[in-house]
Length: 178
Image (tube, rainbow, N blue to C red; front, side, top):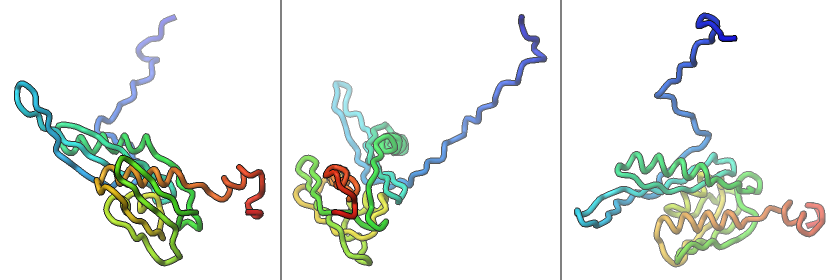
């Protein structure tokens, strides 16, 4: 049986200007102009690196390339939201232990700090740690100071963090025993 046009539900109207509100806050780490030389000449594009986070233990890093800056930033934000990791915070302010993250020639050492110390870090390390929700930490950038690799090394260090509960689980003990 065919339905009459009168019985059909009306089509849903989609708002073309609708944008999904992201739960993450974003910070642009770097924007650079990149060029490719071809037979027809140089073609210029823009590369952007963006960190996103909710300041409650989730942070991500992404890059994007496009012909315009704004398009590159939006691509980087989408990429960063796909690469979000969870960071276990101690007392909602610092990390559990000292660790060194590496990416290329960039190395980043991050170690927990006492309450009230603040974020002792600079540049992309500070941006990533702020968006992760870390409040007290000391960091030192070793080796190369390329912004993208420094940010990636920071993410690597955060991935290496192990919580007390995780270590207790690995050893087959309770958290209180450690």
